[in-house]
Image (tube, one colour):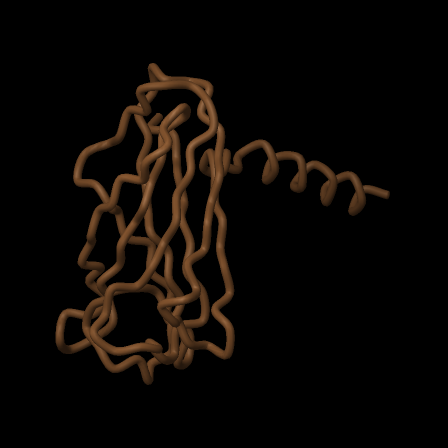
Length: 155
């Protein structure tokens, strides 16, 4: 009985100490572990708090066999009420020439790369839209398992 109480108490302490996960995170698995130009994941998310700042990350998981030190991407976005997409291009560093920058296990590496150097303030409340595409010279980009976006409220 004492063992069950201690386990329950430890579980309560653990759960209450966990940080709240970011506002939004969406991951897309690439078909056949290849990111093609035609595969452009679309993301919709709601912003209600326009007074807070947010960190916007690009996430990617790849194999050690990935042939490049970086990944060029395009992010297309629309604010609530907009009809036209805004396009931005980002250079995502994945290696420093000697080793992968992300965390890894065996031959799989995960990266969470901040897209903007400073936190973002969303101007309008409502539904935002993002679309992600690779902007590499080759197509498809091989050994990419998944890509995504993570948005965290700054504490």
